[in-house]
Image (cartoon, rainbow, N blue to C red; front, side):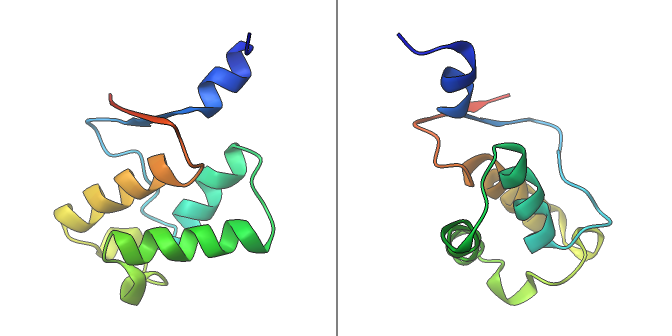
Length: 92
């Protein structure tokens, strides 16, 4: 039976309020949240690139999140909840 830590790793939460950092770029936000889950290395950076493409922010990945529109920030928020390959995604 998995422990609490393992269960938390399997869940992604998309909070209703934005949980991104305006002073970080889109890429830096995803890297930050992935590192919270202990992710690192080339595979992790590839995953970040895949998410940026999937959420339509690849071309703006280096821009500070504060320059994003409201919809772009919501997509980045979603991307942060997906970066660690959760098995289950929940609204927060």
